Image (cartoon, rainbow, N blue to C red; front, side, top):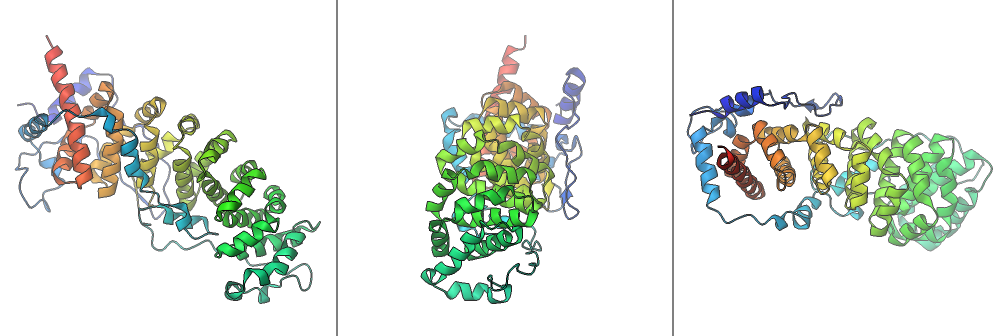
Length: 451
């Protein structure tokens, strides 16, 4: 009997496929652990009983699989009804869409709060919210001085009683003084932070077109207050139309390219909020948002990367934006994030990758960037949710590609898939069984075509 390890060694010596895993690597934050498996580990076939109940001290389940057990499992799967390929399109992607819940559920003002979009909990409990900068002295006496501007007081005031204050802020956005405009934008930002009725009042008061020029202000703090105020205002549905009709998309993208880290994060969140209106998705992509989002994904902080991932996912529900994302180089950093632990990014990255498998150029790029190797690693060592996303993505890559099935086998994918079909979650088991069926078909075709 030839073990998978020996088979893999034989294939390695007779093919031109490199065993080096080229998937993208970016240095993770100091709190993160980038976990990489040793090449060849998944090809080991330790003789033991697959059906033993105690795996605690025996290593990963897939390491305990013999060739005969793998073949037996594949034979079992062969007895199942043929797989309907049509079931792996929109229906499957609806499942992964639950990873990102309704945008309106998150609290405004802090871009990192976008985590509430995600079904996946934040893995970094010590991560704190963005600290607010200390205000400079107000440029004119009596202009909403800081000590009288209490969030608690504002929460208790009815919108009609705030009208004079809002009007003063909106009028002050036209001031020749940068300090006055900065102060006015900051006050509007906080007034719109938590209350929907305040957002409606501010939107109706003409604040949105008055805030837009500040997005291109050379003063970083003024720009930050303005972009965050617009983010907060965008949570009120009618304001979304006012913002897009005022031409804000290009200005938000400008902030995404040139702003401070916090400004970039909040610009990404603002674009995400606008993208909840379907017709805005193409406009945002056409205005050039994808490339700076990819840049934020590569160079941003952990929070910035999460915001970029969430916004890319929402935009890439449109085919043309998928193509733009692949052309902008999104796949390389996404594959690099797949195997990072401790950052809360891996599963979100896999969701975006799964979306990109919906187009041929996305599948090709994932394979070229070493995505199959990275996804096999997740099936071996990832979380339960991560394994679901990984096998989903591999299934999309292999449904119509015999070549990709061969690459998956060469990466040692069969043993961990067999283990997953036995011990994974219900969804993971089903997808692993389906994928193994395809791999078995490829083996049968290869054997029957051999003279």
